Amino acid sequence: MDAHGHHVSQAAKLIAMSGGTTPQCAADEFRRCVRERMRLAREVAGLRAAFATAVEHYERVVRPMTGLAPALGIEKGDISHPTAPEWGPIALFTLGDDRFTKHEQETASRVLKQLP
Image (cartoon, rainbow, N blue to C red; front, top):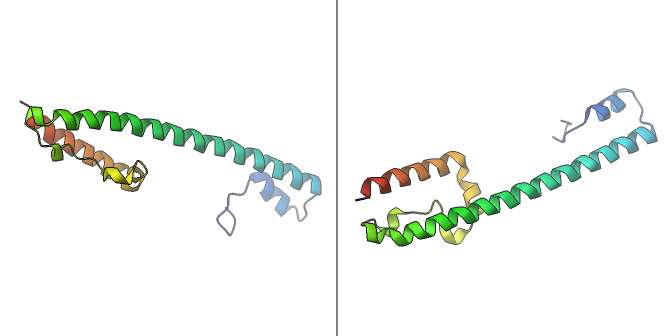
C-alpha cells in the first residue's frame, strides 16, 4: 500500500526503488494494472449477479412460509423478514453476516417449536 492506501504492485515498487522509471516499464506496469482492474470488475459483477440470484431464492422461500404460517397456527409476524422488505435486497448487506445468520437461526428455532 502506498501513502494513500492504494495497492502497489511489486513491479511498481521495484521501478520506484531503482530511482527512475523508464517509459516502457511504466507503460507495461500501467497495462498490467488496467488488465487487473478489468479482471476485478468482472469478478465484482459476477458476485453481484450471484447475490441477486440468492436474494431471489430467499424471497421465494419466505413468501410461502408467510402464506402457510396461519394454517399452522403460526403468526405471520413470527416469519419475520431480517430487514424491512421495503428496503430491498441491499439491506441484507447492512446487517452483516453474524446478525443475519443469528436472526435466521432464531426465526427457524421459534417457528419450528410452534409446528403442530
